[in-house]
Image (tube, rainbow, N blue to C red; front, side, top):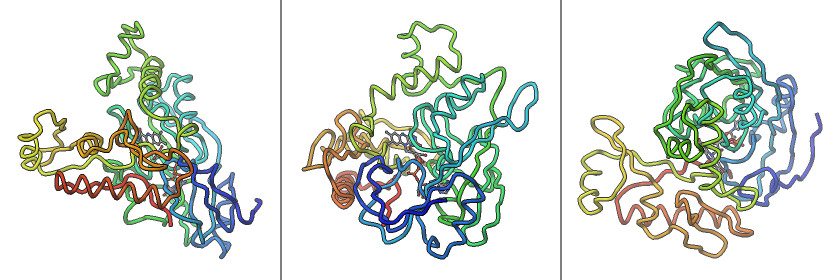
Length: 338
Ligand SMILES: Cc1cc2nc3c(=O)[nH]c(=O)nc-3n(C[C@H](O)[C@H](O)[C@H](O)COP(=O)(O)OP(=O)(O)OC[C@H]3O[C@@H](n4cnc5c(N)ncnc54)[C@H](O)[C@@H]3O)c2cc1C
């Protein structure tokens, strides 16, 4: 394993922010990871996947360990289901495509989500009515302090909306090396009711959709809607959709009858953060090098050479405006890295 000094992270984060790290190591095996975790210089290291869910605020004083552990294989199967195991360094979308080619159903709605497999359980990635937790079998993590490997089942991961134990009680405690998913071999359960999938399948002339068709529809919708980070720096949805008391949502809806809202349970309602940001007047408005995207107000964009601080200052401007207008606190979905 090669350790490099003074490495620019510009190509390692989807905002394309140009900051440096003093030390950089890339690991391609669990053994190499255990080795580097023992090295005292890497004690406080930032664990980096594809860099599509981080905002780097400034030059790092700590090292970076880039996770590049490869490999996808079936480790168990019966007539109905297969357990697929993938290395943390596999590109998430490559795993989705591998599953489609092998006729394994369950993650087709999660097509084209950027990033690597190892980060997927950290925030329980989700899109178009499906979350990772719906197909999750278990993960293997290596304790950063102990170097021991541990298997976490779904219950232990405590998954929630863009949330897991790895963002809370076990934040920075474990490095994920392997993810295992339980996928269908037959009788795939298609999720077509969300985000215009059915409409897109109609436009594609598909009447009896397969998992491949669903993936193609999702790819089509996402490509039309979301800015490509290789052309315009961004990290997807910058904020979580806030969940508020239903009484509060009802009160807001009196003034804004067109407000979209989704029932969470008998007491709580989810309001799309993109709608709140649009109402606060930020959709498509550019402030110097930064702004919220013109097609998707939830996406914070680096239009030029913005620094992490500029981007974060704009995010705070948006949060303040939404708080002032609706009395709702937006919470970043993206991880802020000092
Ligand atoms: C255009 C765009 C669209 C997006 N759309 C979606 C979407 O639809 N749904 C969604 O859920 N997300 C979406 N995202 C966010 C992002 O793709 C996911 O959060 C993804 O899982 C991040 O993966 P990554 O490898 O880039 O993680 P990174 O950004 O590298 O890391 C994210 C966090 O996880 C930690 N981490 C990374 N790897 C490991 C590991 N192996 N072990 C322990 N900790 C680790 C990091 O330290 C960091 O705190 C989008 C992003 C972009 C740019």
